[in-house]
Length: 138
Image (cartoon, rainbow, N blue to C red; front, side, top):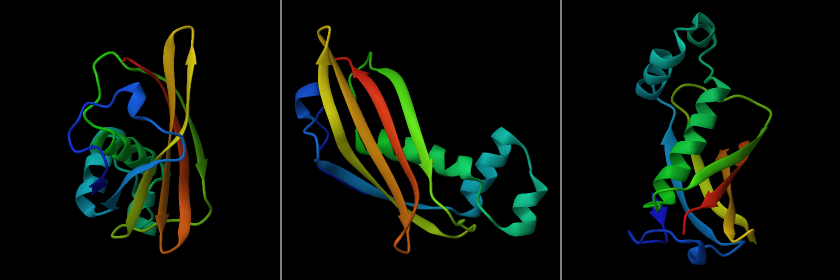
């Protein structure tokens, strides 16, 4: 994992639109898939095709955000998220690189709103582009 914050609590002032904060390589291995199946049930289609469920990519997006933009102050509010899934599929054993960027920050009614982007790629192909919108606590 690469990150630019070095353990300092992220405050609204830290965010600069366009700045890339870091990236994480996520291996879509059997262990990760087994955890997925514990939560969502065993889907025989996964075993037959070897394809990774797209929802696992969404979980990976959130994991990346939580790992890279950390530590966060208590009291943040997850306001919304957007997902754009690419074409193609990933197989168990593939690795994706997820990169986290500040897309926007704005003050509304004395609150700091931050939009974080996460892009997930593997072998020069984009599989997920997501946005996480948060009301930042401080």
